[in-house]
Length: 255
Length: 193
Image (cartoon, rainbow over all chains, first blue to last red; front, top):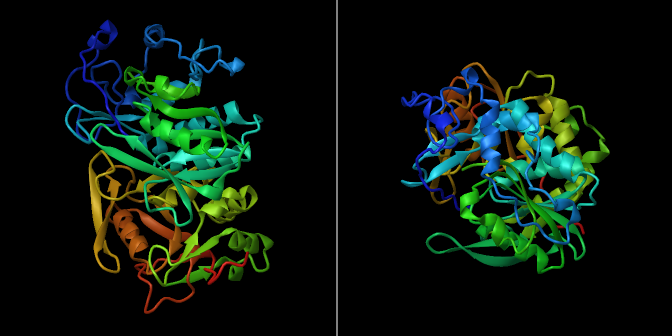
């Protein structure tokens, strides 16, 4: 998926009190609201950080048909789920990848933290279990990491949404826009049936282009997309507003 | 090189293996003429067979003190993480070039008409860790061999490579650097459906 973020200076006075020296190259650290944070093993996120953080987060536009979504679609909601803090800390931020100006949210470090990875999956499973969801669609390639464990836990099938020419059977294709140019997403025609209820999973939502393509692919064969779910959202890129009214659920929102 | 098929190693007559085999679709002449492609996406649609696939690997590895499950992009990603979570191991993605954002080590390997490269993040695996490598299918073993090299270069011990599908014999020797290989099912020639 496309990753874009703006570099902006920290306006959070709490962060200006943190160490600003560059860490050693092999340090794993999160970066939130500007400023480097010294190795997470020795750093405790102050509780008020999340209160400031939530105040700047607008409630999402939720689908009117989803009566349960009358609240921000984030795991943090009104009280922070205690698992979120470790999940957020386990995500590594890498500046200038894949090109200058982009701040990349690297979930591979989350996968190395067995508890945080388990908690990530558990948070999604708790939300979607027992909701009659028969399809978990995961977007290549990082959606393939989170989707199958969720699908297996909730009793759904896993459907990979892939780059062109990877799927061997008959496919449906959907073109979508990137920052420069276009890409295509494919799904096996016979993977899903009309009337099935589906989730779409990816590691991160930025502009929403990739998720929208996935929604269109599923809906064009009559599948009902119940929700899109990502570990991370970049809210400034307003992907949430580009999902055709479909709700979005995320664990961590990164500004 | 030790090659083990599940049916001959503790799972003789296990009904799950036949169901797993039946759930895999064979697509002739993909990606090119003459290749009978073993399509695991149909296995992923069969919740029971998919769960059984993962459970067989979990049962095998859960008491072997494995701390790393390395999955080969992209179909190794579909099996590896669930196994890792169940056995309490880390999941380490082994990726095509330029996908991993941090510092990487790379290992080249040969395909039929060109070479390719597999990368792993520096620091993901520590010396002395016990690892398994997961992929959906093993053919020549070139990709698995590169994966083994990456892990061994950082001092990990590769305990076994695990694949859902594998040929019983490949022309010449399969390259696995002497590591054992555990396979659930053999490919089918034609679709039985």
